[in-house]
Image (cartoon, rainbow, N blue to C red; front, side, top):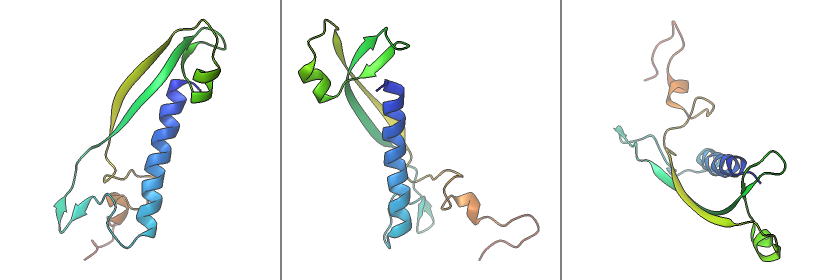
Length: 113
């Protein structure tokens, strides 16, 4: 799998899982506010992957699975790559119905009390 697709799928799975859990729980999971105080802490999603650079199939950096590593008798060189992506789990996006802008009044309506 290409590295960009791996990172995208991992981040989407994590954030969609958090949103799904927020909708089903009676407790706070990554809330935007608690008792009127804004919570804006970034969570770091840490990645450590083994990669190889491939010129075949369009090239690019590929993430290797354990099966690839164990069964690989190729002469390709592999490298470990470590990085972090900050994710604000408590700041939902406009695609999430829990986003604060979805609580704001529409034009001409009163603010919720």
